[in-house]
Image (cartoon, rainbow, N blue to C red; front, side):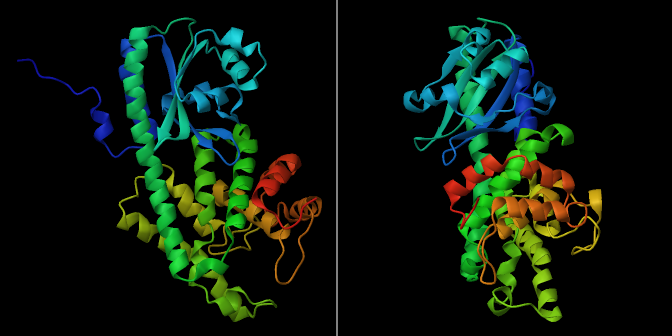
Amino acid sequence: MPEHHDLLEALNRNAPLGEKLDAIFDVVAARYPFLDHIAVAVYDPEAEHLTTFAQGPREREVALRYNTELGPIKELLQQQRPRLLDDLEAFAAQGHPHTARAAKLGILASYTMPMFLDGALFGFIFFNAKRKRCFRPASLEVLDVFGHLISLMVINELASIRTLLATVQAVRDEGDGGNVETGAHVGRTAHYARLIATELRDDYGFDDDYIEHVFLFSPLHDIGKIAIPDNVLLKPGKLSEREFQTVKTHVGKGREIIDTVLDAFGLSGVEQIDVLRNIARFHHEAIDGSGYPEGLKGDEIPIEARIMSVADVFDALTSSRPYKEAWSNRQAIDMLRKLAGVKLDGDCVEALARNLEKISDIQSRLGAERFG
């Protein structure tokens, strides 16, 4: 009897989701050579926004970037069923920019499967081809099976991230960390961080899944503050040198909390996990080397930490504090520009400054104290 080889044995490995998508793509494309690209995009219902979560590493040159409002995909929310577009050039003529971009990249047909968890939409899978009218009923039936497999993989990946976030949040609550930072603050800073990273993606070569993980992990940037006494953390006046040294320990404590949770739940294999570690530990480093905990300079500071620093400072300036009123957006941007090249990364500052309208949209949704 001939030995059977498991075509999908790569899925058994502890590998990033993108590499597993590569393995599935290889199997599917061997059967259907017209297939050129598989991507997974997640849906943010709060912003009605769609962003790439994963695509195979070998496919990233497609750079399709599902970073857009739902547009014509919105109809799938009501229908709760897949959609086949077998001539994207004709569909792009209707004016949707994302579809037009896909056509320019040579993608001429697409099969889109919505992903649902307990009846709620959480994303889409895109099977893309560079030939028109190439999908057939038999091939669609097979793609449905692989689509549901991919959906389960994504659910597992997102469940790992949500377990991490929920566990750390529980630690925060148990430690009476409700005063550390409001939900609105962490929500706004996460959206600002994604805005900055999206603006810089061409210059820095960011993949959309990297950008999405920056967004997902940003809310944990100051988790270490749960270990700082409230009488220090919430002191309305100027901190003494000893108190300031105490506050500075929160970056190391945050990294320790995150690593403890990762080890306890076996989550060290979560994709882009070093992005989370870098955000927690290095977001108080300064471009001129005057920051903490290690006094890193310039490009020595991981880019995700530089992004987080700008997002965090901007939200602090535009929010009310016990010791100050909220600044307007333009006042805050002016201050960021003064700090650029000294405390903050200049590219990150300008990336945020170019998006004042989107900043206002974020603040409208997430409740800034005052903005203008």
